[in-house]
Every structure is written in structure tokens, then in C-alpha cells.
Length: 235
Image 1: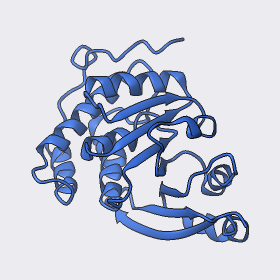
Image 2: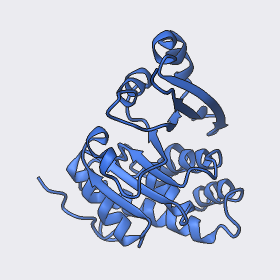
Image 3: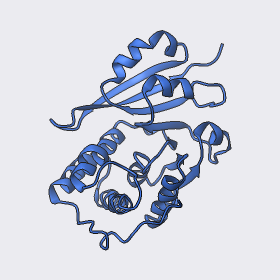
Image 4: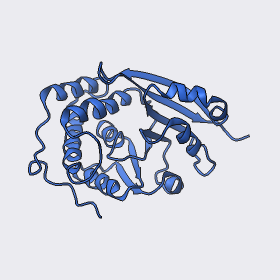
């Protein structure tokens, strides 16, 4: 079944975001933008579209503003604080409902974002949302990342991903020669440390962990990490 389109948020009962959720996002955006009004408005507009579309197709488990902000939007904004200035053209690998791609595009209008999603309904939502938000610096491509990477224009200088696959499986996929990327920024929970150590002998032959930055989502959500991996050159 094709994506039915994003319904009118008011007609499907999507309320305005509660003030405490807005305040959380505003505080997280302050290190990234001055003033914060434009990115904050864009993120809230995106969140409204995501919640509305989620009533007709499964895009995220978040069904209300509090969960969406505290578990998803805030996660992406705090990770964006750790994203280096050198990451200028990014490929969001397995973008799903647009996390982090459309959140980061809301924050960084001067960077280019490719959103890659193999699920047709989700890709259709991403295209519709990018159009509604008037994001000219976003391009959506339907397909597997391995299949589309070489044909993207402009060519991404890094890949970003959030909650795509377990770390060992994902690093193996992107470590293949048919994916000629060099830089990877991976959003992860604390289990990444165990996975990295348990599979270290294999994975460290392909990848170098350049940096791991942690941030806290609050007492109920715990710690999150933005991991910067660099693929080693083949010998």
C-alpha cells in the first residue's frame, strides 16, 4: 500500500507541544544557534508532521509530544552539538522517520543532507516532510545505502546513522569495499562499548574509533553517545 500522505495535524488531533517540551529543545539548541527561533520552529514543525503521519503509517513508536521530544528530538539535538564543522554533506543512512536527518537539517541550513531509506512509505514521508518544511538542502533517495552511495551528488563526506542495526553488524556492512566512505558518525546507547570490545579484534582491523562523546537525556533516558569512526585504508 502506498503512503497515503501526511494528514492535516489538526484533523487527526495533534496538539501543540507542551511548554516544558519546547523549553527542553530550546535549551539544547542554545549552543548551536543564536537566536534559536528558526531551528526550534523547524524542529517543532517537523515533529508535528511526524506525529500526524504516524497516525496513518508506522514511522516511530512515539505517539505523543513528550515521548517524541525526550526520546528522539532531544537525542538528535544533543548529538548535533558534538557534530564537527567539517561534516558538510551528510548521508543519513536508514533515515526512517527523519531522525537525525531532518532534525539536523533544521539546525544546519548551510549543510547538505542526503536521506537514504529503503522502505518506500518512509521515504515518501521524508520527501513530503522535506517539501512541507521547504528544505532545499535535503534530498531523499529510496534504496539500500550500499546501492546508492556512489551515485549521490553532491558526494557525502560522511555517513550518519541512528538505531539502524547492532554496532558490529552495521560496521561490517559499511566496512565492505563497495561502500567507499571514510567517516561515520553513529548515535548509540551505552551497549556500544560492550559490542566494540567483544568484536574488537575483527572490527578494529577495518575501523578506528576517533572519538566518543557522551551526553545525558535525563534520569529516565540515561546516557547516549555520538561515535566517530574512521575507516582504515585497505592494505
